[in-house]
Length: 637
Image 1 (cartoon, rainbow, N blue to C red):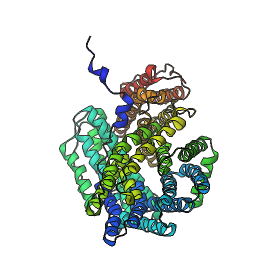
Image 2: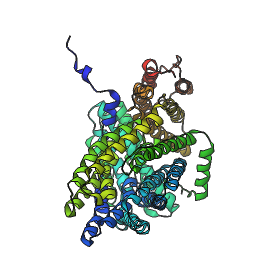
Image 3: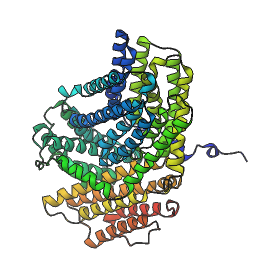
Image 4: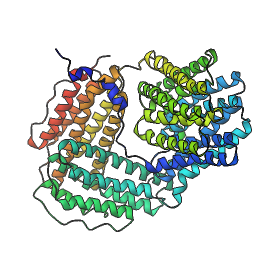
């Protein structure tokens, strides 16, 4: 019997691991990265001091690693924290590098501190990574023979230069990120209503959820800085809030399989154009339809731009953020376990660097620190992608230094590496590694041009670092390969249950309707976050990865439950008979049983579901969720 094509198919986890995201290419970020990292080298070649230019370029590297989309105020906070942490780390590594008795304990201590800092939030986690990475890079400066004081000044100058390049657009495009985020919501609504089949509609609805999350995050972050005083941000946030009925009606239209007149799709496109151009909003189309969902969409469009102003959001004081971080450190062992794992692996990397004769062995520790960031994805996946990317990156680096490329050609190559790293950062970690590796090689070893063994040693160092992480941080670490996505799935099922209860029971006041919309957003946000968590775990060839793959249909089913509830809500708002309280209790009870079964690692019990036609879409999706959790989706530990 001839083998089938499926017999030669790559493993599921490898396919997911190598898959690139569909995130749009961040061209502006790529250009900023290219300018920030290549310009210092161009100036250095012109002045004849390449070593200092490489250090200035290295100082700008944290802005590439930490940059993200968002309001300028948010980016200033994120990038400023990252550069400050990088400067502190570089100083620690630089001024202890002459004595291993000082540098090794310093690196291990910084690793422990960085893991604890990461618990304070996303920005803190990014800053903590820069603290560790540049502490390690600082220890490598001793082997290059650079004066510590001059190296530190050059690095600080590079950090300031990187911040200037990253934030210079603030002066002329202050609210552009927020306007773009609101406009993107309307673009995604137009795309979802134009979808031609169910699969495309589902993908478009997921993109709409992402756009809504991004828009609210950007605007609420900006208002937390401004304490509600800026009229532009209030206008945009009120506009986004007033679009909620249109979002709900659009989801109901798509879930019901209805087609909308072309003028409605064009109106959403016109709204996006008006927001981006700071122009008056177009007049909504005045039409009607016998389809309740389409009629609701016509009515919702008339409310955009006429919503009630949102209440001002109080700014969270810094001391309260510190108190929350302190509570996170004392609320459970997870943060301390992560800190222990990172500290152990960094200590092993430092020990290997002392015992194994490698050239400039700080690269081993650098690899461990970058890979072993559990809040940035799967440890296994990052280790494999880091190794694969480094093989490619070392080839680039070897070609650049081994062939003695200098002058304008080297500046152009550094610009290309920086742009590629900025793109890889949002597309695939392997792509990021393939470009960041030669970039750091050039920056750190520029004066060693023509030394092929030194460049190829980077490959050996990376392999050793990845091996330490895979063996001690993954294979031998207790619980690292056990299924751990069930708790997140259970939490989201309970969040959806909250929306079912709030959405299907009568809303008699404006406060009730606002709370229902908030529950809907919480449900969709929870589902989007759950998708991300599953995508991080599904790349592992372990029980955790197999369970995530088997339970993936449960996420899709819960999304359809939420869509179906939204359809019922919109229909009831426009005259349909509301479901009875007993039927709603059956639905919330079923979702509660699903969550409990997942959390307790048992198969869900048989439950009674409503038999009414009005709730048929909800019950069908809920039954699909139960089927997904039973059988192959259930893994005992």
